[in-house]
Image 1 (cartoon, one colour):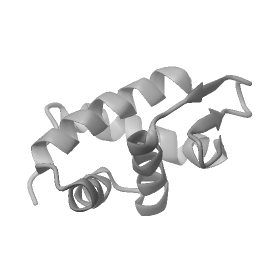
Image 2 (image 1 turned 120 degrees about the horizontal axis):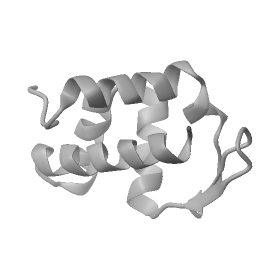
Image 3 (image 1 turned 180 degrees about the horizontal axis):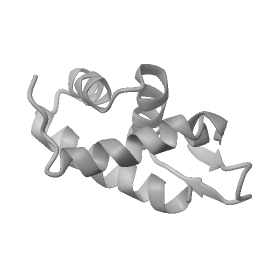
Image 4 (image 1 turned 90 degrees about the vertical axis):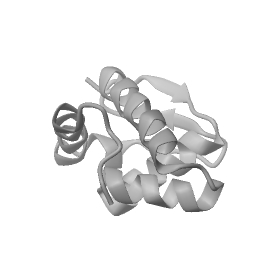
Length: 97
């Protein structure tokens, strides 16, 4: 499977930082998409697709496998999912500084 990310090295570094720092796994997430970051005290809401994406990223620890899982679940082309995941990871990185 080839990467569908436009700037994969930069994106991978952001994602790895979120994982390695423990920030993704420290998030408190409820089933309605309410996300609380205990480190900053900030909270935000994500939709059902974002909720699924966040769980896949935390469980698989891989952008590629997360995209593949979303492709299967929602029957959406890989490139479309990768573009959305790229935006989502960048937003997470900004929120979880």
